Amino acid sequence: MIVWLRIAYAAVVVAAASTLLMPLQLLGLHFDWKLRRILPRLWHRAACHALGIRVKVHGKLEGRRPLMLCVNHASWMDIMVMSSLADVAFIAKMEVRDWPIFGLLARLQKSVFIVREEKRKTGNQASEIAARMADGEIIVLFPEGTTSDGNRLLEVKSSLFGAAAMAVPHSPNGSVLVQPVAIAYTKAHGVAMGRYHRPLAGWPGDVELVPHLIDVVKCAALDAEVSFGEAVEYRSDSNRKDVSATIARRIRTMLHSRLRGRDIS
Image 1 (tube, one colour):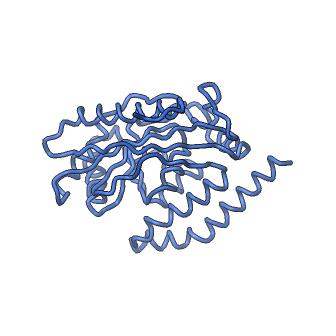
Image 2 (image 1 turned 90 degrees about the vertical axis):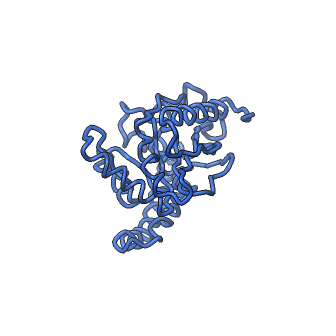
Image 3 (image 1 turned 45 degrees about the horizontal axis):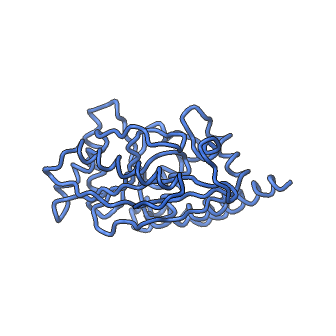
């Protein structure tokens, strides 16, 4: 009975938030109002509350612009968590566009969908990302390119940092800030999950979306800790592989520290 009450409560809250905010978001997208950047944050805050995702923040969001956030990717919940904290847009694989529920949300948030296999389109996509960053939008990149089980950082793909390089010429100060961010799912119902139970939050690629979503709703009490690290300045003379290695090292340090319940020195 309690489980069904949780599901019903989540459904009512999400439906109410969607009914109130979605028409405004559609207008904002149509007329390209800056309101379209703000409304997703309100919706995702309501959704996190409905699903019982409690977000704790360490450090702070970089205040300078242009800004790209590089975040480890453990779950579909990462999008909700990051969107609840800041007015952001995401870089996503093209197949996400057709996903149930989250594909619609990604389109409403004006995500940039990239086709990595078609180099002919890569330039146009990177140009769009660069232009939006130059206009003050915060772009979120998941540099692993896929989701993990939440216990580790997968290999960071340096090629995905090309958008940051393309945004440099559009920056008034000749640089783009790339800030590492680590999301760690640490507790369920206030109890540390550990490596064995973390897949409750983590969503590796071989797990179906809808059953995992239902499991999260049933749990209704997950803690997500978000750590903002020191940003790296990406300039015209920066080496992309060096920048990606630095970002990966900082994300990995923050992620492991939070998973182990330790302060970052």
